[in-house]
Amino acid sequence: MSGDGELTQILTCDIEIQITGPTVAANNTQVADVLRVLAARIEKGGFDLGHHEVTDRLGKPAGFIYVDYSEGGER
Image (cartoon, rainbow, N blue to C red; front, side, top):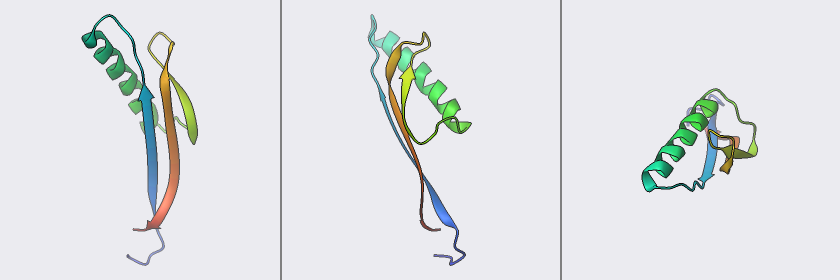
């Protein structure tokens, strides 16, 4: 430990997505689309602490994301 008192920032992120569609390829594409949207939103700090509903590009429920921001030991 460096002893400068600076704490490590910790992000815990759990994602559950369930998509139904006509083919595996179509489902893969839909999940990838949802993940890209979530990644952009996470990068911009768009989630508060807690559970949030995830929707597909049509606005239909597709799962949940859990975000937890915390601090750990000194780095």
